[in-house]
Amino acid sequence: MARKKVVLAYSGGLDTSIAVRWMREEWDQEIVCCAVDVGQIDAGEHEVIRERAVAAGAVDIEIIDAREEFADRFLSQALKANSLYEGKYPLVSALSRPVIVEHLVACARRHSADGVGHGCTGKGNDQVRFEVSTRALAPDLEVFAPTRVWGLSRAECIDRAKDWDIPIEASVEKIYSIDENMWGRAIECGVLENPWSAPPEDPFTMTVNSKLAPSEPTEIVVGFERGVPVAFNGEPMKFIDIINQVGAVAGSYGYGRIDMVENRRVGIKSREVYECPASLALITAHQDLEGICLERDVAREKQRVEIRIAELIYDGLWHSPLMSALQSFVDNTQVHVNGEVRLRLEPGRCFGVGRRAPKGLYDHDLATYDIGDTFRHEDSAGFVRLWGLSVETWSRRQGPGAR
Ligand code: ARG
Image 1 (cartoon, rainbow, N blue to C red):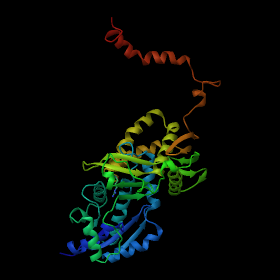
Image 2 (cartoon, rainbow, N blue to C red):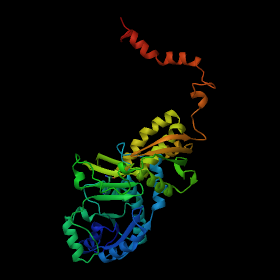
Image 3 (cartoon, rainbow, N blue to C red):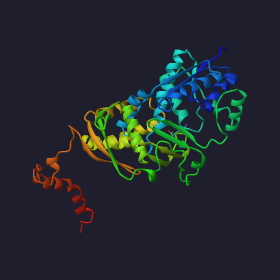
Image 4 (cartoon, helix red, strand yellow):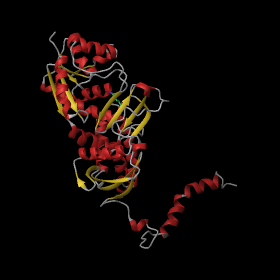
């Protein structure tokens, strides 16, 4: 049997480094590493990742900068749909998997590979996302998941790294499992596995403790076009730069921490801690602007669609016909979501205090209780009588009004 060539989604961490050599030894595969940067790789880290992949036995390594694409094609879509899984989690990890897979598949094609590989375990959501996206984009490619079968403990992985001369510092006690990108950070494991224990301070890097936040509130202004941020404090900016700016301010106020027990696709309940200053602040701003831009029935229907979209993203169905159909609906609702929102930051809090939109539906003359009122008060009496006619009839015949 010919040796198979596999493109492995490579993070540069312990597991995927061991995976390179393990797949070579145990499965006799030729491994090409593909590291996709969605905001988690520091510029100075590229060389280290490259050397580590080669030391682990990869025949080649590609490091792909997908940051702008991630923001412009994935995060913008999630923001337009105010995507929060189970009403809380802005889908940090779930959103990155489909863009990573797109690059993995492209890399597999460039190298004429037989399959792709990932380092996800059998208990999580990420395996689902990697594999379902791969099958949607390239059903002919095989998917390999060494960590699901190798049965190595963390200590054994560290021993293997030593035996195989793979340069990596890792301690036997890895306290947390962390996945991060510009939309936030997901923190699992360690003391967090007890859902009764409050999260300790040490894993947070994007948010300060709100007790250490400035006591003076501050305000920022986010400008939107078609539901996507285009300006920060009045200055036109790329979406990716707005994400970073908003994240820095919101994080400095200790805003964006989430502590929840969520339902994984595989049926496990999992205690998750997140810090998502940029995504939560931008969703707050976007929802606020929609408040004056969306017609009532559209707004209500959109909320139902949003729940479904968040589930699809979480469940690995970004690349699916339903997702694409629902995205079209959302895009259609965003045509007039243009304008600005003033967000106020206070320790641990972020909320809209002002909004304006050139085509907004807020009509001062209809709303005002002051002079200038154009609302036809005389229309209301008949409207309300008919609105209540059905319950009135019910009351008289069958309810409290029936005597
Ligand atoms: N529970 C989150 C999700 O499923 C976060 C997953 C984090 N992944 C990780 N490898 N630590 O989207």
